[in-house]
Image (cartoon, rainbow, N blue to C red; front, side, top):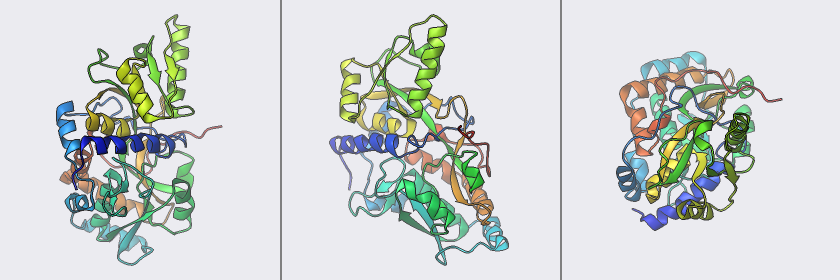
Length: 342
């Protein structure tokens, strides 16, 4: 079922709310890798809008997701490790299907069950490469850590950021960078926001208690010390009100998770991205698949992800969801994560 712009607008509102509340921002751990921290979304706004407004968010979309043949080295790695899937022949993946939203992971519009989104596509690729069936299990964000540790789920692919604290309990295989993005009115004269000097004197919408707010407060402190005018931070709990503030000129920019912002911009055509920043600025980290530490699965997952990168299926997933700016050149096992907080 194709959806129109008005329907997508409603979905976009959910995207931003979920991304701010549950997509890693509230846990203060979503930051991107330095692999592409300064990259910007590719493709014209017109092309992105055309793709988004004709996009099928029904369960039929799952039929079009990229696939990969079983990767011999990965299958051999699983066998050698002794790892046994929770359900024979299946890769049981913890994902916030029921509570998620485009473009990361969400339930199909027609059956409210089929897992769609970039995270679903990546998980399906991993399952394919391991010679297993993709078996998504919808979970609340707060429940996945214990579920992975207890062996209830084999793995999670759900916008999880690598942190040094998490590495004590889980093994990781990176597959995406996590970016925060600045979005302005599509006809705004603002063309680039990537550092403190770029926000001087601007009015910027930001979520309270988020990583975005921490970054802007640090940048304002830097500006003040340099004798320059800091940015004015404004807070909106309602996505529609925030967008209206941008369109009416009462705010210059919105600073939010890049994935949700890029999707919103592509869907509406009213916004444009003008810069990305590491979610853990000044530190960086990767989004990664996570397994129970030492269970033997992560090596095989890493092999599959790199095979998909080399074979082009990885890029196809990013292109399907407008996340090209969040690509990585190579999956790494347990890459450096965000440092522990006091």
